[in-house]
Each structure stands twice: as structure tokens, then as C-alpha cells.
Length: 473
Image (tube, rainbow, N blue to C red; front, side, top):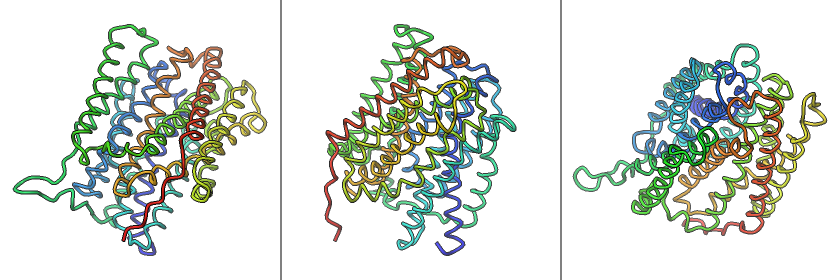
């Protein structure tokens, strides 16, 4: 950590992951502006968010495996360039379909980049400094997430929504310079070792990744397009059938591949691991649905600017950044059940408070208390959840367990953004109509609060302290 190479490697990892986190949060703030400029429908806004989440969630585990095989630094740099080129295409988009296609590409680049940013630190830092480096990465990446809506809102008001994507160009330039100068190459030698002439010890699970992506895409398409086409229309029916078949084939392929699978089914021999990932989907679905509706509602109904909207979301992220280490330490002391039960209840109470926000609302009296309560609830959840997921499986599965839980959180957000407009009757250009959007917003927050309370019930009934495993000899 005290060397120039250590600082340079850490800077490259933080800036790169910061780009991915930034684009996961700031786009919600830009939705009303880009929707108005491109003439996008509600479905167009949904796909702008979900195109990114879908490819990122579907391919993030494959991205980690590619880095292990071909070199973590190489795949990391490919991901940075890919993500940046896709970001420029997003910023240049003249039509909604162009923007959505570029968001799909951007998510795929993020899937190469995200696992690489952390594995670089794990593989290159001295063991004595590794925990310190990862802690610094976590904290600094949290700062970038916190600043995302704030900086993005300012760029949207001062310049254009397009600049939230163009901002990635100078950040990527700094990443490439730092990586070229200081980051060494590393790979998992067991991933490239051969067994006999020309045979690899391990193979890529490309089929699993593609089947998972098709299943998610089918479900998302059916949910997003159902309001316009009708639930019984042939395209929707075909999408549902394809999604179900892809999901079944995914399970079959993963079972046959065993430990070489992208998602070893042995992981689900741990009931706690399965329960925690269901909990993850529910909680992050509530988070994704809330942020999607809240940013649009504040601008199109309450009448706030993009900058003020980004500022309104800042306390939630700051609470996560400051409070997560303490929540993790408390969970290690008393077990995760209490925090995973009380946290979602507090977050649900915050959402119910925010349902009452309307035109001319006071930030200090009506918005801040609900956002702060929601953020406090999430703070009690995030760190204990991550630690419990890792503790629920054998150490050799730590990487894939963490990756799957990360994917589960993104799938939760993806499904919420796809399903909630259908459930609350928002379609077409209804997000531009105050009355229709107000009704949909209040209904959506009620659904999100219900998801959180469902997660709390699961935690109270099924979550327990992970069994302590003896340390290795």
C-alpha cells in the first residue's frame, strides 16, 4: 500500500469500478430528460435501465472466469475500453432503440470490468496489505456511488443528460494510464493447466451464461411489453415460453457440469445460502423500484431539477457508506437475523413516509426523513447480508458465491423495474402526466414496502447465524 505501484493499482481499480457504480445510479436521475428528448415511452425508460442490468447480471460470473484464464489485467482493460466505447454510443444516441442497444453493450463491458477490479487487488497486493487495500477500494467506491446522482444531476442541468455518459471517457483514460504503468498481470494457473495433450483442466460455461441471459431477457421483455401488446398476445406468450425453457435448460446444464459450472449447484446444498439470495432479490427489487420511480416523480410531479433530485438521494448513500462497517461488526457479534429483520422494516417505513410527498413538498420536513429512514434500514442490511452469504458456503466457493449474490441483487432491480409499471398501470407516456404518474408512484412504493416486509419475514423465520468452520491447518 505504501508503494507507487500499490497506490496506482488501487486507483485503477477504484476509478474503474466507480464508472460501473456511477452508471448504475445516475441514469435514473436522467430518465425524465432523456425520455422527453428522445420521445421515449415508459417501456423505453424501462429498457434503458434494464438493458444495462440484464447483461451485467448475466455475464458477471463469466467475466471473472475469463480473467482467471486469460489474465485479470488483460480482461480488466478490455472491459474498461468496451465500457467506455459503449458509454460514448449512449451519449450519442438519437433514438431510444439506439440508446437501449448501447446500454446492453455497456452492461456487457461492466461484466468484464467489475470482477476484475476486485480480483486485481486480491491477486497483486501482499497478504499483509490485502485487507487494507480491499477496504480502501470499498470505501472509495462508495464515495463514487454517493457522488453519482449529485454530479450527474449537475451535469444534466448545466449541460445535457448525454454528459453522464461522456464523463466516463476521462475516467477511463486515467484507468488505462494507471493500469499500463503499475498493474501487473496475474491469472489462475489451475484454470490454464492441461490434462493430457491439448485438454484443459477447466472449461468456460458459456452455455450457462447464455441460457441465463435468455431467461432473464424473456421475462423482462414479457413484463415490459405486456401493457402495450396484451398479456395473451403471441409475442408475450413466446417470450414466456422461451424464458421458462431457458431457465430449465440452465438448471440441467449447471447440474451436468458440476464444479466447472458457472453456478455450481452444490452451493444450494446450503439452505442458508438459498434463503439469503431470495432475501437479496426482494430487498434489491424494492431498492431498484423505488429509485426508478422516485427520480422521475420528483422531477415530473414535484417539479424539482435533476440536481436537486440527485441531492435528495445523497443522504441514503452517505448512510450506507458511513454505517455499513458498524453494521457488519454488529452482525459478526450478535448474528445477522436481527439486523436483516429490523433493517427492511425501517426501510419500508421510510417508503410509506415518502408516498405522501407531493407538489411543493418541503425537502427537510417531507423528503429527508423518509429518505434517511430508508437509508438507515438498508445500512443495517447490506454488510451483514454480504458477510452471511460468504459464511454460508465453503471457502473454495467464496468467489462464485459473492458473484452470484451480486447478480441476484441486480436481477432483483431488473425485475422490479420491468414489473412495477405493469402492476401500477403506468404505460405509454404516462410518466409525463402528473395525475397518472402520482397514482403509479404511490402504488409502486406500496409494492416496494411489501417486498421489504416479505424480506423481513424471511429473515425472521429462516435466517440463522452461519456455522463457524474450523480454520485450515
